[in-house]
Length: 196
Image (tube, rainbow, N blue to C red; front, top):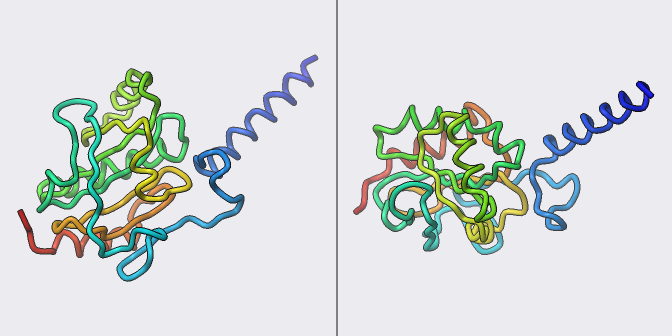
């Protein structure tokens, strides 16, 4: 009897680890073993969206405060981060995102977390924000409009938008601390001229 429980517990632990390592793919949309996508200047970000292109119109309901719209933040550098509370890698990158937000908040830069949790899960989103002590703004996108826009087959997914409203960098997968490609793209975006 005890052996059966241990076997079931070990199997359950392996499933949790496998899910965390695989990322949070939407069912049927990501091929097993597919590499993480990332694009820098001059590279395609997706079939329809390229680094350097104007970022398309996007808005979402804010968890607190007025609605978030990319157009309202022209002249700032924005890191949109698509995530969900049920996504293990998404939760793991929260401290990295919070660190970026704190480090650069005086530079007209902000991280905006875009939750694609179901509309009835707002209390779960709020609970995670409290637990992780998140201070950057959170937008709610239960219809996954940003995921469609980025053509991201898995989450987390992030897009850096420069001061002119252009896509400066895109990444599918968790952002790692001191990621050299993000640091390079962020440095260039922060140095860019401000446009209002």
